[in-house]
Image 1 (spheres, rainbow, N blue to C red):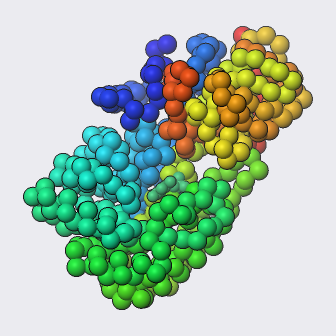
Image 2: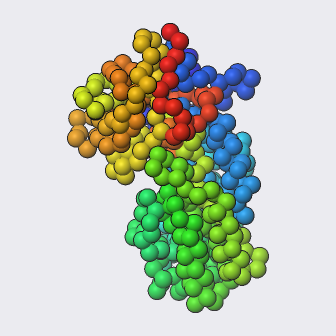
Image 3: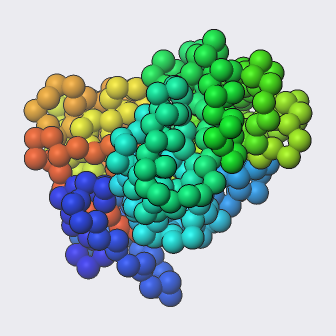
Length: 418
Ligand SMILES: Cc1ncc(COP(=O)(O)O)c(C=O)c1O
C-alpha cells in the first residue's frame, strides 16, 4: 500500500510526536477512489482527501466574503487538508488548543493564528503568546480576561494584544446548536467590552450562530445583538467576527448559495457603522466538507441493515447523534454489476455499543452485500477529526485522490471493470 499511510488514529493531534507527512509530488496525478479500492481492497476505513475541491472551496469563500477568512482547524486538522486550504489562499487559522496552534505554526511559520476558545488553560495562553506569536485571544468572562492579561504579561514578552469578546446568542435553528456553552450574556457583554478596551491593541466581538445554519437571517439577528452591545458599551471596536456555521448540502438539506450569507453579513456589518473596523469569519465545514469522503467495507448484511467498518465512534459521529445523511455510492470492483434498483439502508458501526447506529436512510443498490465497499461523501468536515479508538477500531488510512466530490445527485451505483 504505497499510497496509503497506516496510522493508529487518524488525527495528527492524537499522536504524541506529530510527524507531518511530506506533500505528494505535484507532478503525479492523484488516483481515483475506485481504482484504489480495486487495487488495495481496504479492510479498514479509507479516508479520501480531494485537495483540488478544498483549494477551490477556500478560494471561492475568500473571493466572496467581504473580510478575512480564518479556517477553524478543529473541523479537520489533517496536514494535507491544511496544505490544500493554504493553496486556496487561507493564511489565518482559528485554533482552540495548543496542539492545533503548534501544528498550524509548524506548517505555516508566517500564518496569523488566533486563539478563539473562550476558556483556555493558563499554560496554553503562555505558550501561544510567547512561543507561537499568537496575538488574538477570545474571552467571554471577566475571569478569562484577567487570565489572558496575567499569563501574557507573565511571559515577559511585550506585544500588542488582541481581545475578542464572544457574545452569547439565543438558541437558533442551526443543525448543531452552539448556544448555551460559551458567550457573554447581553447583560454582561457591554461591561466586559468596556473592561477590555484599555488593555486591547485591537478589540473585537465574535459570535457563532451554530453549525450548519441554513438561514442567512441568523447573521442579521446576531449582528443586531452585537450592535446593541457596542452601543451600550460606547467604546471603539476594531473587529467583528461572524464565526462559522456556513452550511453545505447533505441529502435532505439544501442551503441557499453562500452569496446570500455574504450579502446579509455585509449589509449587517455596514449597518454597524464602525469606521475602519475589520470583518472576520471562521468557517470550518463550508471549506472542507466536500473535500473528504470515507470508503467503508460492508462486513455483514441483515435485511435493510448494513454492518460497516466505521461508525459513530469513528468518522460517522454526526450520522448517529445528529441523524445526518450523506451522499453514498457502492463500489464493487469484481463480480456481478450492482442492481439498478436502490433501497434505503441503515448502517451499524463496528463497535459493540448499540449507540453505534446510523439511521440514514442511505440509498444504495438493493443487492449491496458483504464484501462490497461504500464511499460516503461530504465527510471532510467533522469526520476523521471526531474519530475515537473505542473498542480497538482505531485504524484507518488517509489517501489523496483526484475524484470530484461525491454529490448527492450522483448515481449511487458504480461498478469497476474487474
Ligand atoms: C469558535 C468556533 N469557530 C468556528 C467554528 C467552525 O464552525 P463551522 O464548521 O460550523 O463553520 C466552530 C465550530 O464549532 C467554533 O466553535
